[in-house]
Length: 96
Image 1 (cartoon, rainbow, N blue to C red):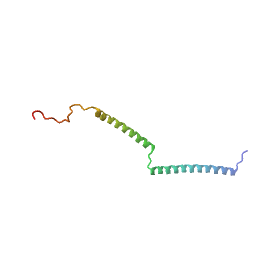
Image 2: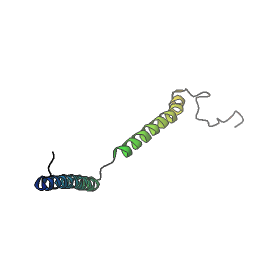
Image 3: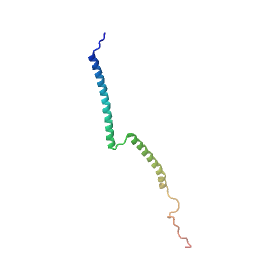
């Protein structure tokens, strides 16, 4: 035989609503903390991780491109000049 106790029923309803209120307050506090931290990060002018990784990859690609562009220049600088030892001006011939 089961009896209904109105005091226990009211206590159960009250505790259920209190738990719901505590959960909602926790979500609200989390949301407020996140927005506050986002605002602080924006004021500090910080970079997000995905932007940093994209810039890092772009810099690596540019360094590789610069290295490939420098290869012909260094090869040309190491190559000895062929031809005469003059500066390219013509010497006067015997006729004057």
